[in-house]
Image 1 (tube, rainbow, N blue to C red):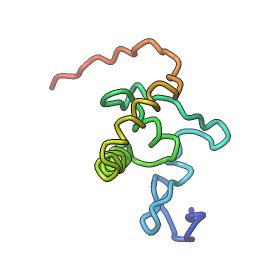
Image 2 (cartoon, rainbow, N blue to C red):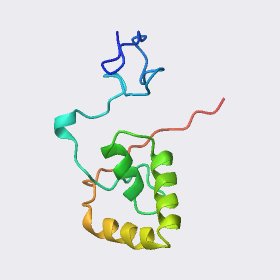
Image 3 (spheres, one colour):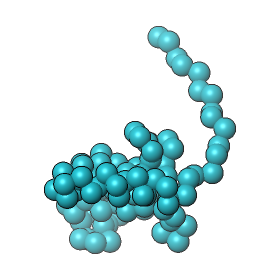
Length: 106
């Protein structure tokens, strides 16, 4: 398998290209046509805004959080108001009942 952006050779199980960092088909969780901007309940820390934006732009949620905090600091707190606005405007994910996974003890 080869990367579609840089042409580097990849293993079949690689989720990211080691040369350019782009997602491989194996690493994609959604198809590009079905991509929606939604608040992410599973990966959220406060409201799911950064996790939802990270999923939409196909990047790591931690990187999105760092970018958001840096933007809030640089803009003298305007990022906090933007976060609150996004929290109110971006729709939530549909509710799914929690899946019970028994813990294994060894």
